[in-house]
Amino acid sequence: MYRAIASFQEKDERGMPFSLSLLILPLSLQQDSREILQAGSRSYLLKVIAEHPELLVGFASRCADILPFTFEGLGMLMHVGTLTVTTEGFLLPGNNRVVKSISGSEESKACQRVSAYLGKQFALIGDRGTIYTTLGVRP
Image (cartoon, rainbow, N blue to C red; front, side, top):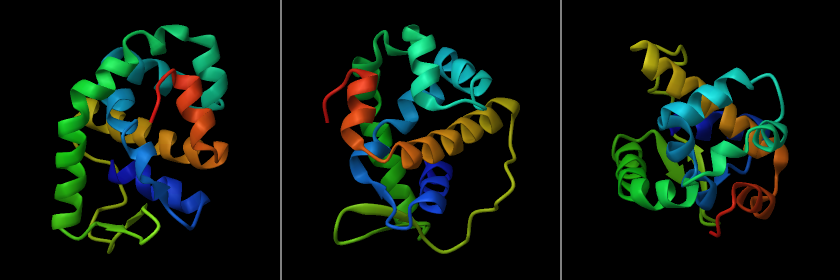
């Protein structure tokens, strides 16, 4: 999630809206979704979703199922000081205690790359409603 928040903030200085952070793990951790997004990472997210409607199958339930882990991840990032929350509810990367280079197992690297891609694409889209509507979920 840190990679997504950091790449979002590179495009939008205000930071990532909290509601968008709830979409990162369901898209980046599920293998089929991750592979589709990784293959389409040179394209716009909305185009990738339009070309691969299978991404949306069961997405709302995946979001609900992984929500406790998302909250746990956000809490851990705040606890170690790598995430700050603005008074407006935007998430910003905290101090630079996270190594910029992506490392770990191949699966971990893929998850981090897709997360960074999602953060960048969410910032480029710029409208939470469009993102949620395209993914077929309600905030």
